[in-house]
Each structure stands twice: as structure tokens, then as C-alpha cells.
Amino acid sequence: MEQGSPHFVLDSIETSRPHASGNGSLALATKTRTVADPNAGKLFRLSRRTQSLLGIQIVASGAYVPERVVTNRELEDSYGFEPGWIEQRTGIVTRCHALPHQATSDLCVEAARRAIRAGRVDAADIDLLVVGTFTPDHAGCPSTACLVQDRLGLDAPAFDVQAACSGFVYALVTAAQYVATGNSQLALVIGGDTNSRIVDPHDQRTAPLFGDGAGAVLLARGEPHQGLLCYQMGADGSGGPLLQIPAGGTRCPVTPAEIAAGRHYMQMDGRSVFKWAVRALTDTIELVLEQSGLGPHDVDCYLLHQANIRIINSAMEQLGVSPSRVYNNLFKYGNTSAGSIPLALDEAFREGRIHRGDTLLLSGFGAGLTWGTALFRW
Image 1: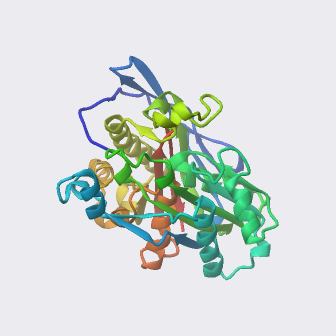
Image 2: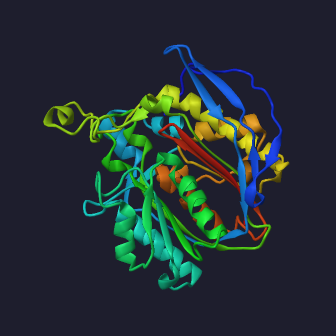
């Protein structure tokens, strides 16, 4: 994602008081932030609702990236970049690409197996599977979740959630509803994408940004103080054209002409997405912290979508968050979309960065436009 001149202008908002909702959750009466796009003349209205959902815990995690490591040197030679250009612009040094025989379900299965082993649980006890992905094995059906379910031998309902780079947070919150209400005793939540298959390999603006990978967590009932202290999921479909795959759906089926034009690949307005991402990230984090009565320094570890180091740094600087509290592995994997947050979570836990009772902040943002932010008490 490239940084450019400001594209969105955010106006002031009116405040409103939170009110109690069912199940002990906290709902926030709608606030509205109006965002003007001076080029298109549109107005974007962003929801200000939040909720909470306690009594759940993450009992184990696992992650997987393909063996094929693609270095900046390879891409700089291919595209004619100056040495160091990619890292300077994005913070990315390497990324992993799926091997020819691998698809998204393969990455998800391996991440899930590692989570199951780490949790020392019997796969037969898993009664729900939710997969966040926007790069499914098949364009229509079956779902990637069903393919994963079959490979793992699960006796559980399985379905995909499509929210692009926000997919893991969306999937996590969705599965948490089942666990908190007792409709699931042990849920498997996976975020994974194979971005190398949907980016135009000849597009030097986007291809170097993305990698492939998957991460998984197991959710179960926890102590009353554990779980989602506060979360927000949002969407602004009017920004859909900023990041989209034009051909391949029912609106515009794939034809030889569409393929020749490259419209089956992802297209991104990098400057606009960059600007939106920084403001969306700071806005949603400020909101969940405010509604939780916490400050930026009360969060033990920030696990943010690994899109571009300049997005992360810009947002954290505006919020006054110390870099020591922000976990980054972008330099190794690039943007793995729905895989990025669970990859970071798994690595942070294995490195001893996450402990019982810690407060984590997870935030994803991407195509849709969508965003999902959650304060999670470990």
C-alpha cells in the first residue's frame, strides 16, 4: 500500500452514552462519523457500536506458512526496484508463497493440526469450525471450511466467513457467540489466505506486499473475566471499489477477455486504502478503549493486521502506544490477510509475550471495506 496525499477528510462526531444490552454485554448507541471523499463526492457513515462477550478463552493456537520463501532481492530484480525499496516502503523483507500443490485449505489444515496438538485436545471434541478467508479453494462451493473439516475428520458444522483482512476477527467473534451461549463446547477458528494466487504477478504496486499463511485458535468456555472485553465489527461497502477483484463472481463472470485484461486479479487503490487504514485503525482502537475504560498503556500486547509497517507505526504514534507493546512479524511474512493476526498471536504466545490475565488488542482492516477490533482478556 502506498502512502500519498490525504484522500479522506474526517469530520467531528457527536457523543452518545453507552447502554446495557442482553447477556451482560455493552452496546453503544450509534455514533456517526462522516467521511468525505472529495474526488468521488461520497459520504461514508461509520458505525460506532460496540459489544462485549465474556466467559470465553483461547485454549491453544497454531500457525503455518509455506516453505517457499520469496525475498525482496528476487522481487527487486524482477521488477527493477532499487535495492531496499520494498523494505523502505512497506517494512517487508520476505514473504512465503504456497507451493504449486497447495491451496488455502492446506494451509488451514496444518495450522489447525498444530493448534490441536498444542491444546492436547481430541479433534472429536471440536463441535464448530469457522474459517475466515477471501481466497477459498473454490470460487463457489464447497466452502474451504468443509474441505478442512473433512481433512481433520471433524463431526462439526463448518462454514466460511468472508471479510478479507478482517476475516479472523469476524470469525473469532462469530465462534465466540456459540461458545458463550453453550451451543459450542470447543470451537476451531482459522484465518488463512493464499494471496499469491489472486494478486497480479506483474503488478509491482501490489504483488510484493502479499504472502500466504494461516493461523488457528481453539475457543472454549473460560472464567467470567476472560474473553472479549469490548469489540467492534464494522463495514463500509461504499469503499468496496478501493480494493476488489472485478471478475469471477456473478456480477462479472470470468471470460477470456476478462482474463486478458487481468480483471480476475485483485486491484487496489493503494493511496486511498493507506489513508483509510490509518484513520480506521486509530478510530476503532480509540473507541474500544474508551468504551472499556482503558487507556493505550493498559493493553499488554497489540496484535494488528500486518499490512504495511507504516500503517501500523502511524496509527500507534497517533495513539501514543510504545513500540514495545506492538507485535510485528510483517517483515517475515508480508500481508497474509486473514492469516496475519492469528500468525502474530501464535508467535507472540510462543515467544512468551502473552500471559494469563493479559489484555490483548486485535485489529483487522481491509477489503469490503471492513474492520474488526477486539480487546481480549487472555
